[in-house]
Length: 626
Image 1 (tube, rainbow, N blue to C red):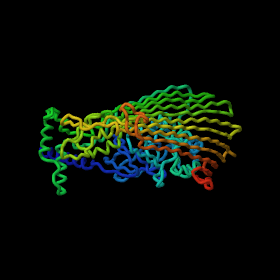
Image 2: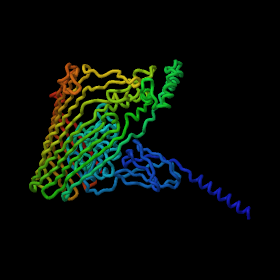
Image 3: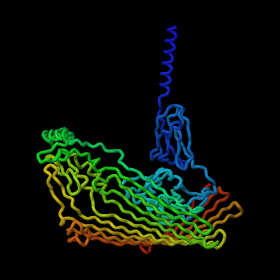
């Protein structure tokens, strides 16, 4: 009996061991693409049972550890999700298809809309209002990440006000500018100037066929931003988003100066050089660290006289970010309106000891369209922003993180600490001193459009618009007391001199004027033949002027106007302008919604070329599809 029990126990243990061995995780890898075999970066690959998972990289590739028999779910915004059972597969490549939508759905294209079923070019549309409602975003360009296949979004800075992303549509195609053409409600404008709460949809024209109507300016693709309109009964909406921001991926720097000096000596020894720091200096720092509140012979606390500074903690803090949006919208038989106000305030996280890395912005928008009668409607789109950007030299903060040592006490404004050890390099910088700047950076941008439309007969419409977009900014910096202090002897080392302090003023004014006339005609012949034609004429004028003046020798720290400085150091100014006139047309034909033909042509005249070479056909395309 005992033998039987022992035998059964052994068999149970063996079976459990076999089960454990068979349940070991396996590595699954592969690639997620769209129906055109383009990679889908940022696609989600998750374990269906637990929800844990990963995301694809820029090439659409992924890898994940799972148990055999697990179900993997592949999902991407705007595409139909797929669930796949993991058997003995180690490589799983997945093709995701766009969500099925009505063939009658229309999408925004160049100078109008088309049925999705009748598109001959590569076009993707993001319902921005739906996709972004679940997450807070700082600006429109960075929010484009992962929303459209073939669109690469890279954000190179996290500084508030300078955190717009670089967008590339299907990669880099030239050694010059690779930026796509961005149009907001048909007007060329920076998409980051638009309040993200005001955006209804974003359409990306990816290939030459879809972007041809815009000519050579669309060589890198086109992004069409459409803002909201009123719908139905009057509605008042308010939204608020607030967050506490803290640094992530903290750098672990050597903050023990005694250890720092030992590592430097070890490095010099490894290359056959003499030690830089005396052992007595190292011992003195280590002894002072053990008694930080003790005092030296000058009565200064050891933590000041013998500093062990963690510079990452000194320049980084926490900040509060808030965003408010208020909108009023509605429509009836005669009027369609959407009005909004937005306010954004970001403290930034590099804000220690008076360093200002913050950002403030006010935005407004008014979209109104009035239907005068059955054949005439008029409207306006007014929007703008005012912003203030903190002058903290963020780039210098990161630059000097590896050009300083923990043996520098941070100090405070006009009493910045310097390196204390006599063997230390004089180039050991105080980062806070390098980051501080005094002045302001202000900007205002406006965009004002008047438009009208007449419909003299069925299928025919004539539209006209005029747009004026002013843009101006003021930037100023000036000197301020910014001296250094000896925290060993508690005496001043040096102080800023008025005669060496300077004042710099920069200012620019830009304006863009656009006028446009469009003629559209749409008809259907014998139920099977859909024909649409577009003809247009546009003019664009751009003017910019700026000045940049620096004067030296301030008369008093409180006098920061340019004229109060005594000596002219530099002066520069310039003005530039250009004009563009364009004629363009498009013809679309669809037979039974299946056989498609499209022709686009654009004829441009630019003032930036010599008079004899100003005019030419900038683009001609004849795409055919089925």
